[in-house]
Every structure is written in structure tokens, then in C-alpha cells.
Length: 280
Image 1 (cartoon, rainbow, N blue to C red):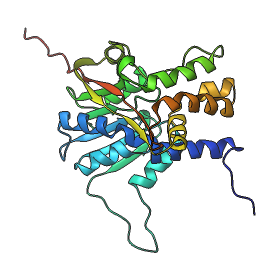
Image 2 (image 1 turned 180 degrees about the horizontal axis):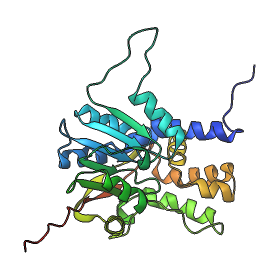
Image 3 (image 1 turned 180 degrees about the vertical axis):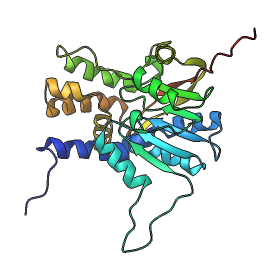
Image 4 (image 1 turned 135 degrees about the vertical axis):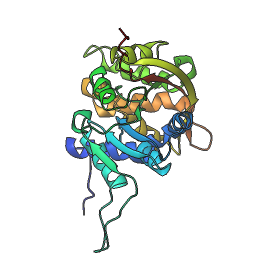
């Protein structure tokens, strides 16, 4: 009997990568989620919209604090896993699982509707950041003065993973310039916020080490970020995995685990308040 493989079908490969994100990589960002939620005091009074919500872990954590949450992500496979996580179907003929707080998921913020959100987040620093158009649309759905939080990589000298990501940049050339490994320059997040019509209002840094039980998990986790896609397109999957494995050996411990220390940065911006009409 032959065993099923995901290596030969692009659709199955995309599904497998989304599953790897959900099972391996997404949890690396938990310290970031917690730091942002603590700072903004996310709780029962919060109505949160998550841009790039991935497989829904950040939404689940916010919902666990009592918040009403809604998420958007362009990756259909990640969004499907978020639905499994947040909107479970009834099993064995049992009653539907009712939650006290609404949980909504969409492909993009234009589908959300007119819910007045009090917090908007874009907390996936590993992938392509939310474009200004997305942020502007999300901001239009939020109450004036509400925080919009953007996250990105911290300084490269404090992110061990940035050294590994150089492989993606090198292998992707000359197909396209270095892939976007998150926003890491000092003012990139602020500039993105301003381009979306938001007002920067504070920032912070959070340690988010990437720790894996073995080399295979490290490979699957990093490849699930999408940051190596251009390198795979320009060369092939086997070449990328080979060079990535060689680079990861510097972070492999005697017990076989792999650990890279990283620092991520987040910026809090505010939705503008309407200008008050001056008295005559």
C-alpha cells in the first residue's frame, strides 16, 4: 500500500503548509499577542478585528479574554483552519456549540460590514504586512481613536532568524529583489501607519524565540511562513530545504532541538477623530 504524499500536488502542498503554520509556527508569536493584548487591556469590552489572522490563534486568545473577534486573511487554507478552530461544527448529532461572543471570519476587510471595532491588529510579522488599503478599510470600521497595532521584525542584529532568511533573498534573485521578511527598519511600521491615514501613538518590543523540537519541525515551520516561496519558485523545494538545513545547524542544540532568539517590534497607531467644527 502506498502512503499518501503532499509533495506532488500544489493544492495539497498549500494545505500542508497552512497546517504547519497552525501546528508549528503560529505559536511562536504568542508572546507578541499577549504583550499587545495586555497593553491594550483586551477584554469583554473589546471588539477586535484581526488582519492577517492566519489560523486564528491570536483571535482565540482574544476571545478567551472575553473579546468579540473578527478575522481576515487572504490565505483560504489558513482561514479554513481558523474556522475549524473558532467555529467548530456539532459532532455526533449533538447540539451546536454556542459562544457568548461572536466569531466572524472573512477573506478581506471589505467583507466585514459595518461593525464598530475598538481594536484592529495586524500581528503576523513573518508574512507580508497588511497593505495600506487594508489598514485604511479596517480603520474605517473602527471607532475614532481606536488603536491599530502593526507588528514587524525587530533589529536584524537581535533576530537570529534574519540570518536564515538571507538564504531566501539569495536564492530568489534575480527573479525579484529580496523577499519581504517583515518590516525591520526603524520607522517602517510608523510609515505604513501614516500611509493608511493613522496616527502613530507608541511602540514596544517583545522577545519571540523560535524553538523547534527537531530539524524537520524547524524546516516545516519556517517554510510555512511564505517567506521562502520566491526562493522555491526560482530554484526548487529540495534546494531550498538543503540550504536552509545547513543554515539551521548553527542553531541546533546537542539534544537535537533548534532555537533562534528573536525580538519583534509593534507600533500602536490611532484612528483619527473627526475634526471638530470651530465655533463661529
